Length: 359
Ligand SMILES: Cc1cc2nc3c(=O)[nH]c(=O)nc-3n(C[C@H](O)[C@H](O)[C@H](O)COP(=O)(O)OP(=O)(O)OC[C@H]3O[C@@H](n4cnc5c(N)ncnc54)[C@H](O)[C@@H]3O)c2cc1C
Image 1 (cartoon, rainbow, N blue to C red):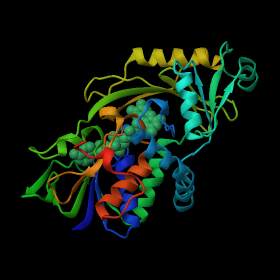
Image 2 (image 1 turned 30 degrees about the vertical axis):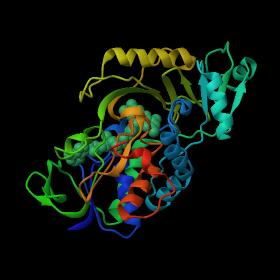
Image 3 (image 1 turned 45 degrees about the vertical axis):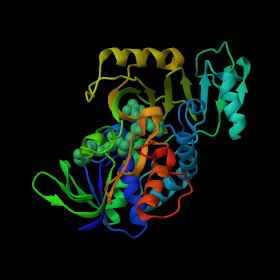
């Protein structure tokens, strides 16, 4: 029997396990597929909500707190595992934003680093992009990380820390009154003092009947990736609902779609062509080049994009950390920290109220 059993091995489950382990607790994690192969693997790794000025204070609080943690987290993981998560301060160029006034107001209020670049400045600073005809907003302090590398580093770190991984599906929770007494896997029952559901888009199905359920549903996102280009220190670009993320090795990741197709994570030719065409129009160097990778993932969407980070009442030993929708990478460290503070009964720097189930 361990102190904490985490269900779900995406970024949220892994970082929650890491925080709990840091407190000295014994931790095990159950993952039905391979660790980190769902939404987290599919993510672009932008370490900011795409347009933070459209998000609630609750989302921005855990996002800005996590942004401060990421450089050190990536550095520590590299030193401990030798795996580089590729935290890169690429900056973010925001084109054609309908809400430029709102964007500027937000940047000023939050005192975040920003600049409005004129057409001349854009064309001389970003010669690898299409010719500009309008000014754009540059947020120089936005970074990216490479999700599959971050996952590999976290998995390695947790294995070295002695965390036990079970490669099985948690089928159901076993109850006695307001106690969770175990988790039924295929052929065995795992027991722990406390259980934390971090099952991403699948989380609601694990909550027992008869209590308030989280409103979490899957929203598919498709991405494509181009082979390496030789543009040094390229900037991330956001244009409407689409974005381009340059990787350290020169690869160019392009996202993403937003589709309400249930738990279907298949890719489509239509999305492939639309993402490819978008990238080729923005990056002339890509014309005639075909993407060499195409994938999809299921974001765990929740009302107002605010995750649930809370105890599940009336159970004494059940908690939930899920529903991070489009911001699960950028908000993960602070979400894990808050979850750990809640289950250990510690005071938290973050106000837990907005993330409760009954809100
Ligand atoms: C295309 C795309 C682009 C994105 N880009 C960004 C971005 O740039 N920046 C950002 O911040 N966020 C981004 N996101 C959102 C981010 O990926 C998610 O919010 C985040 O990964 C959610 O993490 P998670 O651990 O909750 O879920 P997941 O990564 O889906 O992990 C949940 C895990 O739980 C496991 N599981 C579920 N049920 C069970 C069970 N019963 N038993 C055992 N295991 C179970 C699943 O197999 C899965 O591995 C993007 C998402 C997509 C799809």
